[in-house]
Length: 109
Image: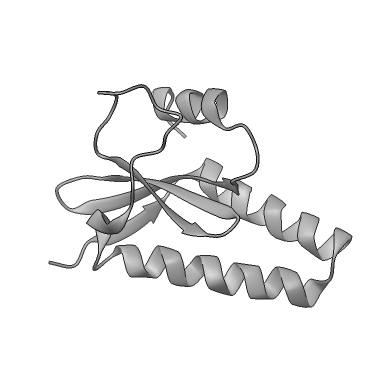
């Protein structure tokens, strides 16, 4: 089964801000490379949504359908539903994401 992949508005902003930061602090070429690699991760979720792991920041038993995939050090946090993959967060995995992740999952984006 192939799932459709949807990205919340907040996740789209994450991606834009990440690419802008990389372009300003490294190079536009590096930003484009990271964007391409993250795009590949997102596309791959359509056919392999179960490959991701449960984010360690979420308390045990909380939203078991929430998973994460990586293009290190970046993390793509997503939810698997019956028909869709919903991308909730794209962030540098070196950040402490617990409060941000819990906030994103509790409020509509």
